[in-house]
Image (cartoon, rainbow, N blue to C red; front, side, top):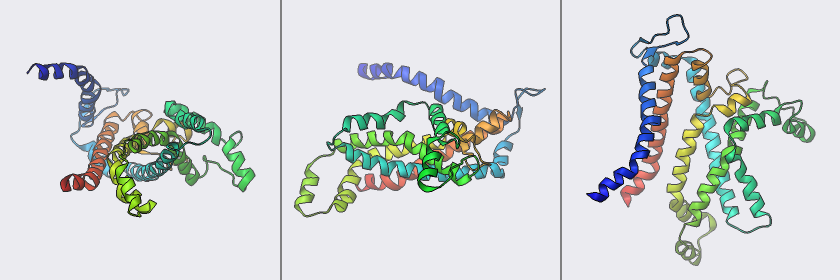
Length: 291
């Protein structure tokens, strides 16, 4: 009984912080989502409108378009980060000249604030002064202008996200790979298994929990991408990079539709939970059941 009380006492600061900065804000946003509220209008009071905000977003073409482009962005960014992160993790497990320098440079993007990342990429992709348009023009004769080409803007935002967050995937997978037991790999080599067989039947199943935890983290982060994209493209050209986080920002701040923006936030949170749950059910639950 004493140890149980001590456990709750040690957890109490975390529970208080979670309640103040997690649960209470969510309840407040959920409450606002059932209202029409513009605090800067002549009548700044909340007007309860039942589920009108949720009905509106179902038929909102801008919301549906931003949701579609966001899911496309998340797919390309997260998959690329997983592949590159695994390759780099395997490479960093080996010794090679300049390994310490490369590891330090590779990890640097993680310590940069998202808005700084967007500013750096804005400078690098500006046609008149950017190094990337200059190199593409010199080497391939391609004029990069993310302010005019929707495809170029989308591609650059994906590459920027990969550059920013691949180090996180690399560090997570390095920790998982280092902790793997050596016996299954030695036995597989003795039995004549190839590298691809070892990867699919031994390495991947053993690192699956760490891999999925990393996927969950990156999914949640990618779905709420705002700062980098606002700084780099502002959601344009047109609506080609108006991801769901940017769409919510546009609704809440320039348009001051606090109720409608809150409803979109709640739906995005729900979709994030559903996607993570589907991944868990599809990849983890069957393995636990067989075990």
